[in-house]
Length: 319
Image 1: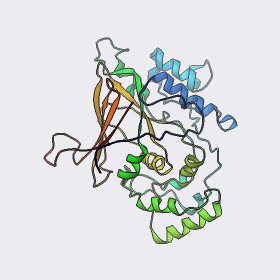
Image 2 (image 1 turned 120 degrees about the vertical axis):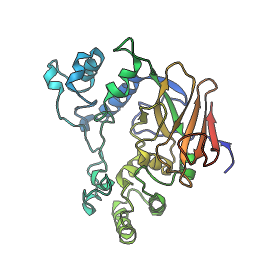
Image 3 (image 1 turned 90 degrees about the vertical axis):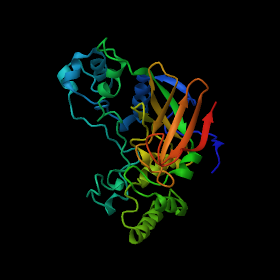
């Protein structure tokens, strides 16, 4: 495929907390947290609070982390009450009706998505925000090297790129059969017929939907994505959530990402940790804040230059 400009199709969100964002917007990290948290609040009776961000007692000595616990976790003045196991997990559509067909036996390191499908959980619940964000700002130790800014770049991976080039997820599951399944569903409101089609596929293709959460795909298709991905890395992206990348592509959406911005730099590159794209290649994005342009490449090695050949330019997006 020749080098081309990808046209962004946009992303439909379930709630409206991200609708105002545009390609290449710069967003303070606390604003990202607010948008995600308020999205959960918009689900009303389904959301009753809980551990929105990862808790560790050792961070209570850090004013910023302590204030985040008080703001987003339990509404209490008792510090001891902040350390709780009230996991955020709710099901706006109810439990996945296809769950009964499967069990939680692991294949590799993961269970079939149908067993845990349909749940909305906090993306920061198991993520150490101090380590992944605040310590790199140099705010706790004046002598510490500052690596990132407090702002995140909002951009999207184009739908056409996903549909054309993604072949597998990071769990190494080929997505060709899930793509075929999606194309054969005539009515996503007809749960009974979907159930029968799943039986047909189960009889032909073992574990075909292991990395394809069918109920979640239906919700993205009908109501929209719950939230963008948040990328806590300067040199890589798509380290998690490549099943969501696939679902965005198949549902006609671009894949939205908040990504860290390196301190005092306007140009940098991020690379996928897995060679899950066409011909077992890695995907890289060269980001340029000055001209507001991102160029996408495919290549056989995570490092350039490589004896395995020059990277293949596949397209770009720009304002």
